[in-house]
Length: 353
Image (cartoon, rainbow, N blue to C red; front, side):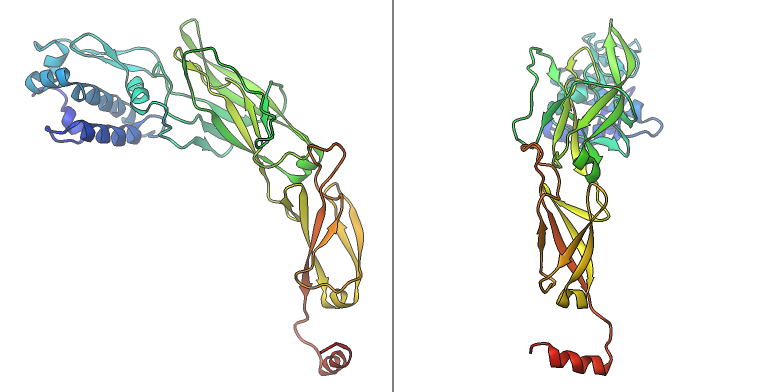
């Protein structure tokens, strides 16, 4: 048999059935997909894998290939012709005996359908779109960069509180799955509100040509927004002739804070106090999320399980204008490492048994 060995390319035996071919294609296509594998020769290997699967998964093509080999397949059983062409940037095709062009990225898309074979291409401050390369065979290049400036319309989904505006779709094109990215915000930003700006770079398709477009998305963080709130920019993903661009979805995440811990609209603060103050009372300085301190007097005996609630010193309530959650004080009581005998005797005299 002359030309490529499609069975060897997929790593299957010559009597492999459909299930074995599908299993082999899935494994090899994910391993050598250009969005995942950047090694030399991976993209060419990805093309060969698609070519092998398209032939072997087709009963008629497979019969011709088994009898005449690759050259016979390309020439309709008689040989001749290179049968391979480039259909544009990032797109490879090969010609079968029927004369139809098969795009390896289209093969990948049709095989996986709506499944997202790659969990996510996000990494660090920039990342690639979720899922495989888009329809039309062009490898996606979507990425994020944090920066100042710019405004864009956005939809809000406040964890199911009815704030999502939605986008009706009249297109019959295949919709790309949403592209999601975590958006880290500090508790100070949640308290006062903030504006985050993210520069995106995406693929644009117009007049039968691809180009790259940069755009700045402006995200207005409202005071009191909860972790998990979703901010959606409809159809801002990569464009191809055959897709509806993906929505870009930012998901709010609270940054760890050196002093406070968030609990919904409340914030918790753990104060360090001495054993003496825990038993006899005293005054502690409590930091506030808006800045500054509040002096709080301890009057009751404080135990390790004691909690004090400072009403209205937490984060803003999104549903009640001007209202705030509470600050919950917890206590870390510092016990002395050792005591003189005279002090022990005095404590035994005054403390209840």
